Each structure stands twice: as C-alpha cells, then as structure tokens.
Image 1 (tube, one colour):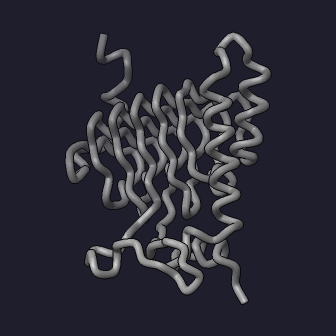
Image 2 (image 1 turned 45 degrees about the vertical axis):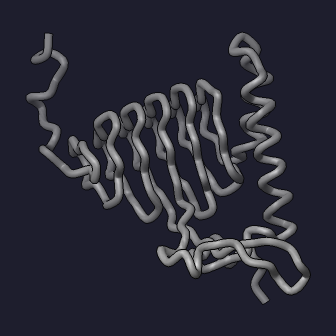
Length: 203
C-alpha cells in the first residue's frame, strides 16, 4: 500500500493531515525560520541550514531570504542559482531548479493544487474526527540559465525552458519554450532571445 507521501508525489489526491507529511512540513518550516534568523555574514551556518532544508542543493547556490519552503526535500536547486528576497516554494510535487537560475524578489513556485468545486475543496472531518482537505500537486521545472523576474508566480505543471526570461509580475500557467522572453498574466512568449540581445548592443 502506498504512503500518502508517495501518493502526493505522484500527483494524486492525498491527505495533507498525514502524520509523516505533517512532520516533514514542520521540519521544513522550522528550518526556514532558522535560515531567516541567521545573518548573511554567517555564511557557513546559513549554508548548513539550507542544506538540511534542501538536501539536493548545488554548489554556490544562494537564497537571499527570507524564504518559506513547504517540504524542501522535494526540491532541487542547481549550482550557482540565486533567489532574492521572499522566495516561496510549495513543493507538494517535485520542484526542479537548474543551474545558474536567477530569481528576483517575491517569486512563488506553487505546485499545490485544489479542486475547483468548493464542495470538493472545503475541509471535512475524517473518521477519526480530524480535519483535512483534498489536495494534489503538479511538478515545476525551471531549466538551466533562466531569469525569473520579481513578483513572478509559477503554477504546478509548468516547465520553463533553458535560457528563458520571465518578465516581472508574470503568472506562468503553461510551458515556456527555451530562449524565450515571456511576460504577462497569463504569461505568454513575446519573442525569442537572439545575438541581437547581446549586452554590447544595449550600451
């Protein structure tokens, strides 16, 4: 019989009140708080906390903080990737962040999903009297060399292709192909990135 964790990670309806999942969330929330209370000047301590929170953490990855991560153990962050203030990751399904990914302030990566009908979404009491609800998730992948602008929300089920740039304030609801500039709510590709975008042509 599958555990609720296995069911959750497979993208099926699961019980978030499951004891194993509650314990994993409590650990991640505590580590997020510890990280947020640690000074930037104490780099070794910060990295140690972050490595406990996100075991699959690449070399020289850096999260400015504050951060809030739901599980951490279901997220991977590649080498040299960076996030500015207020990164939120709800990793009820896998969140994969590649190498050299830049994320601006207030980026939210939200794999968590709920039923659209309130009759199926609202909390209910289980046989043991405890409250729970129906949830499921869809994974998020951000491939290498992407830049995610400030105040961007990425929802479950999305892959952002390598080298793409997501404009500030966008809500990404569908896959973005590689080397694209995409903006808006919902986020749409407006053009491809080419050699004409070289910094030499900007200044």
